[in-house]
Length: 247
Image (cartoon, rainbow, N blue to C red; front, side, top):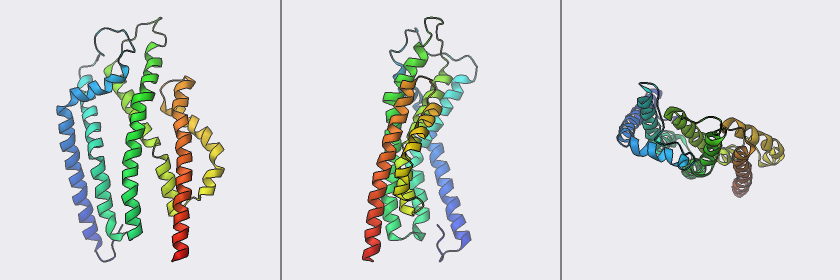
């Protein structure tokens, strides 16, 4: 947010400086992740452990495939490590133009974003991914022997980890919209029936399987998260109305 007491060029220079710091941080954390790429890939392979009787390891069939997988895993891991710094820099850049209440709200918002993303990714890693892999790997294995490319496996796992972390932001987005006055909590209450349909549509898009069990594993948390967002939004706006009356 622009501070009226500071020139536009100063804001642009400050923004450039922060962006350069973030780029440098991503490069640094990517290099660290590249050094530990074997451990990271082994961690991504754990959900498939015991789901197949294929001897040996996953395969790659292109000359540059394995290098591409390592670089992708390193960059994604580096970005995740620097994400809290990205949020911190965004707050520092916007803080001069914010009121005290807005700063307090951001102080609670940023940890909420990080926690919900981690919880969503953990839910995907420990619950969704093992069930999805069990279905994908063993379905039809009595007809054809599965020989899995590591690039396909890693892309599937990273996609599920990322998107479940994103969809778990649902209550955070709902609270922000309610706090800003864009949406009233009563509107959320009337949107419940539509959200159930949207939750199953999102589950069908996110999950790589077609079985209803895995889709329910995604849709059910989305429905619960919507309810959490609704009740927290009511609590936040109620406090806001009380403060307005007192003022």
